[in-house]
View 1 (cartoon, one colour):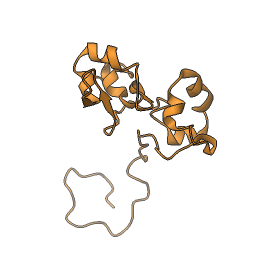
View 2 (tube, rainbow, N blue to C red):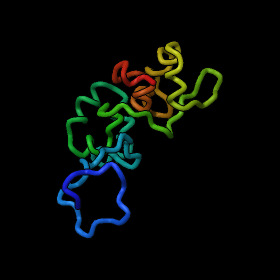
View 3 (cartoon, helix red, strand yellow):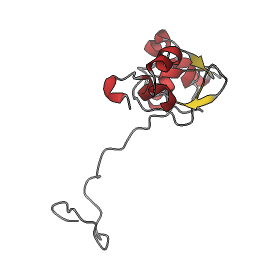
View 4 (tube, one colour):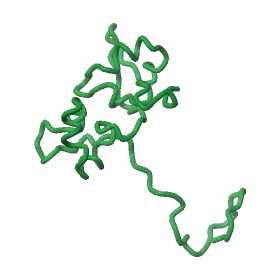
Length: 134
């Protein structure tokens, strides 16, 4: 390993491993679809995220925090797999919401497919402030 970082990639890897990791591990901003609170079938991350009372009662618990970062509103990324169904029945990605305020006002407070839209589309709904808006 080199003493100082270089701007160019090396032509061959170093023989010795680094003493410290290059950065902290990143936490996924995706809810675990298999997680169930206390192994109860209906208590999914989406269920936890539906109301502020459920978030308050559950999101301080370690295994919930680790498995439900979107439902607990610990991050702002959009879930690339989640779709918003518009009034015409078309399915749209979260980023569709960010294009017009009227869309955010109409859909971000709604529940779709068992989840609160603002939890799945935090960035596009602007839940984390104006800096999160594309």
